[in-house]
Image (cartoon, rainbow, N blue to C red):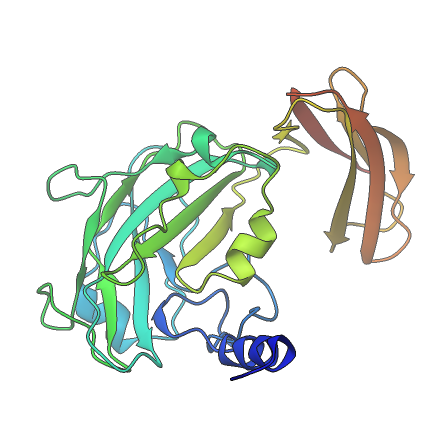
Amino acid sequence: GLSPVQADLYARNSMKQWRGSLSRNNLADTGQVPSQGAYSQSIDIVCNQNTQLEPDQLINNWNNEFWKKPTVGKNYIYVRVQNKAFKGDLTAKAQMFFTQGGFNHPPSSWIQCLTIKDGSQEGEILLSDNKPGVLNTGDRGASEGFYFTPKGTDHVCIIAAINDQYFTLNTPLSLSDSNWNSTTWLTHNGAAVWHNVNPQTTTVTRLKVYNQDGTNEKFVLNAQCRNVPVGSKVKIETEDKKFNSGEIVINKPSQYLETEAELPGYYDGDLNLSLIHI
């Protein structure tokens, strides 16, 4: 038999490639575990505002982002999926959600999107003939449409999760509300993707921040500013001032910001990101 060391080595090597229903975090995502590069702007979550798309449009234009800035009110959203490196048929289903932008928000706070066809929580994966079917190795599909109905221009996030007959527990609303790591969930789960929606129209954006368990914990917030005018000032603070960065001067076009705070158990607060122009 194998020694524990050899068994662990073989297991780690075998899990370097995702084998199953894959939705891509970015254009270069080929199913490597963990995935590399950006993971919050998935190319396979598609928004087309209030114009519906056919599955063959999404499949035949596989590397087209199709992304359009969502409008307040009704939008149509979809998720694409491929049988990646699995030697067999997959019968996949999709769920889609959105949540207010923020940090460490529990899956139980996500809002489930419903299908256009019949208001179901779970949507069919359709093939290029616009009919449900199985995904053989390498086959590509796209979900039926879901409604996405933001009520305002606040930053939100759209999430998609794929289940199939061999991967049945990819159900975000059943995840624990402890301080789970959404980054690990996205980079190690080929059947889960995320797309930030940034319809920012003001210079103040409000996000949510949570401590999901009952112990006091230190949280560090890292943010990156891009294309912000040099000389502008950015301020990151919660309304109760637990996070309070003060005014940070932007001195280069791409700049990292960091602030930290100790949050009490089960903290639920509003975080304001303010841009003060020169």
